Length: 66
Image (cartoon, rainbow, N blue to C red; front, side, top):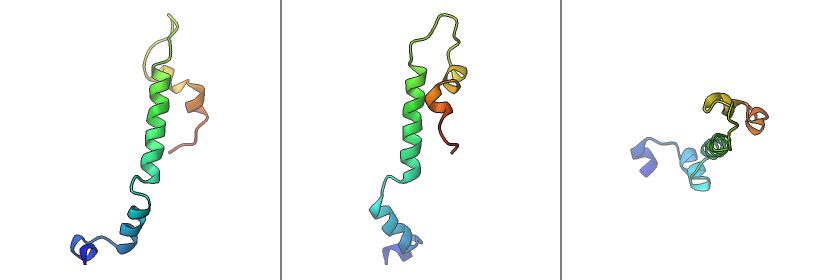
């Protein structure tokens, strides 16, 4: 009844019950953590802060695209 009122398929509801956080959200949270680790690494005096340093981080270079 509730699924009908909210116009949500029952299968989606049961999938959510089984895994409320979701696989995509876990993947994004893991990526956020890796980005923060790369950003907060000690910097060399000549190395620029920001996205260039993060993009060169070896752990982020080896990951699969989203």
